[in-house]
Length: 460
Image (tube, rainbow, N blue to C red; front, side, top):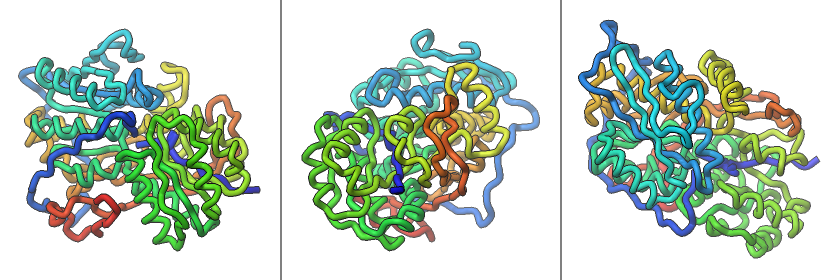
């Protein structure tokens, strides 16, 4: 039987798939590069922060702006974040918010939580994964609602826009679930932190296993930050594991619906396996074209496993294969993931999906940072405690690397055993990895990387 691997961001389909895409008509805005001094890196691993013993008080409510996609091309992933962030806030604060047990953006755009005597108001906005919309709602949140922290968003291109606005306003941004390397690479600024993984972590997790079976590859990805970053990361990581790419990487506009020409290039490449990095609805016509052009018969799909909705659609022939995935609710074994699993289906009718861990991690990181500053939500105070923070989430321990604010986290290798389970319990656990990607900061900020390996991905 052929071995099939599957990508999200995400992805990839990512739905690997990820961590995260923008409409093809929108050009991601790069956040300004800010010269900052190299951080002081502790010689011992940081420990999780604890709430001040005296209890938390604040003179006025802390205001948080959560931006996600509830109506655009990546709304399937935005739903993961909207529900899991609220569950994360409930877990971290000890009680459900004012919106009740189930949050619905079509009913309310606010939800209020409390830590001791401190009120936290979460304002929710839909950007439709459009950078122009992202900019509009972000400025409204900052100028009108006077928010103290930003959370978001799904599209990597829209997230780049959000980074620039956060820097301009000196408001910390916690990125979830966008996956582009650029977010904590060429677009890095000191106010941007991520809880989502990046493309390179996907590639490290996948290539170690993919290259045990195949040695020659070709790949296709969407023509924007997420896709180009993912292609560069897979080329680099798989090459280091002994693979060869037999053709130039293929990039197609994100809104492509006819992939015939691209699949002809892949079919004629002579590769053993083709790697797909795609997020959003385009994955469906891409895979249909691969079938129509005979690609699925002549070579194997190499990518990470994807979201629960699309796995049964495209990966029935992959039963028995082993591949990487950034999160599946069945993989982590810890009380926080138990809480997420136990509360998601009763309230939302589905089990946690690909990005639910990212949304919950964003909420836990926010609350831990507020506790660490004893309620001081000045941008400088918050970023001071976020840099180098360690906290526990549904994927276990998350470490915010101080050099570049990459979130070091567990990822998983799973074996696909079925695509028919009504609870999307499709996998058998194989292994847990903890990828440590290179530092991908721009040359001007290279000193921040310290002793970390410095990346040389194309476009960096």
